[in-house]
Image (cartoon, rainbow, N blue to C red):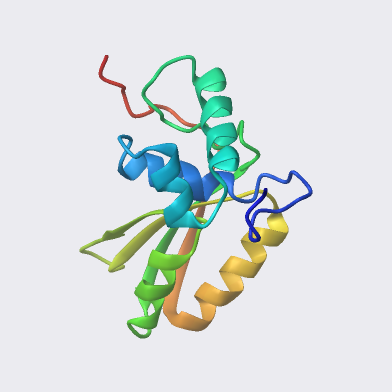
Amino acid sequence: MQAANVPATGEKMHEKEIMNMLRKDARLTMRQAASSLGYSRHAVSKVFRRALRQAGRFTIIPDFRQMGFEIHVLFLLEPRTIRLVKFLKQDLNVNSVFGCRGSYSLMAYAIFRNMRQFADFDDRVSRLCARKRIHFIVEEVKQEDAFI
């Protein structure tokens, strides 16, 4: 039986959400992750197995590009209201948000499957910030190291 909010088309829409949860607490059982997210245990297990096959190791550092998230963007933002921070914390495209000092008070790293997803996100952000700068990440020079 498949949970109601898991796409039946087999689309990978829920992968990032599952991986983010496991990244925050890798000791979660499949049952706990499934229950927290409202997905079936089978769906969570399938994502986890695929990640292990792709990574070839037990420490999960997701390769978002291999998972279909091709567009990586760094946003420098000056919020108009606190609603921007709330939006960034809740949006599934946002991987990290940092408080900054200097010309901008926030920096957000977000990933998208396509330009349409990016454009929709950018429109929402634009309404919530006083000003912004966008930097597209074209090459990863160094990746987080795994401790083995």
